[in-house]
Amino acid sequence: MITSISGLLVSATPLTAVIETGGFGYEVHIPVTTAERLPAPGQQVKLYTLSVYREDSQTLYGFTTDEERDFFRMLVEKVTGIGPKMALSVLSKLSLPTLKGAIAAGDVALLAKCPGIGKKTAERLVIELRDKVNPADLGTVSAPRLEQTPGGPAPVENKIRDAVMALVALGYKAPDADKAVRQAWVALGPTASTEALIKKALG
Image 1 (tube, one colour):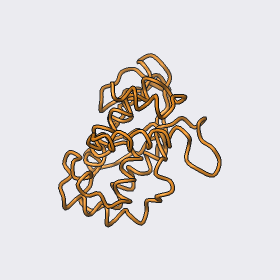
Image 2 (cartoon, rainbow, N blue to C red; image 1 turned 45 degrees about the horizontal axis):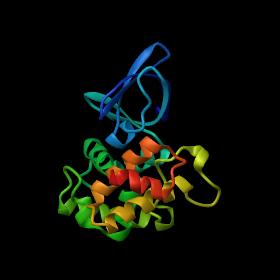
Image 3 (tube, helix red, strand yellow; image 1 turned 90 degrees about the vertical axis):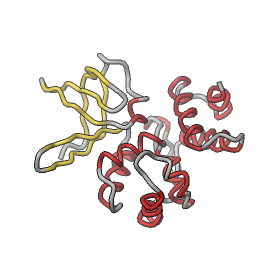
Image 4 (cartoon, helix red, strand yellow; image 1 turned 180 degrees about the vertical axis):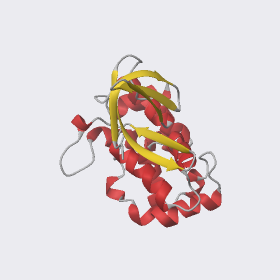
């Protein structure tokens, strides 16, 4: 089992990255939320990975954090009707804090907005994962390890979640708010305040 890969980022698209290490180039399938946080080609990168084996293929999926990788695995293994491609689509549409929040809150309407996820599949997501999502830990993603603090979610993760909630309160649709804040975080970096993220997201 390949649990992570580190090497030179050769190329990247919104859904794939090619990483060269040990003389081999590995094609890794990634969600858009991971592609947004990749460095420029030619730089070193590390992705947390999950290998999925089929009779006719072997596919490597990669994520910025091990939490995202583990959530991807849970989607594939625990939710009926969700395979790797659909799970990748879900993680491409919404960041992990937003996904966990939607599942914990039973927000079927928001989950159903993910490509390929209809109302019935969204309901299964809530039913099968709600007891596995800890509402006190909804912010577990997106931030570098350096930002984490013992005993609770990272400050950056709190800021991202708070900024998304603020935009939703202003009338943004949740997926749009999530995307805008993700882009603001990438542009401003982990030291940005919640207010700065909101201002940047508002454009």
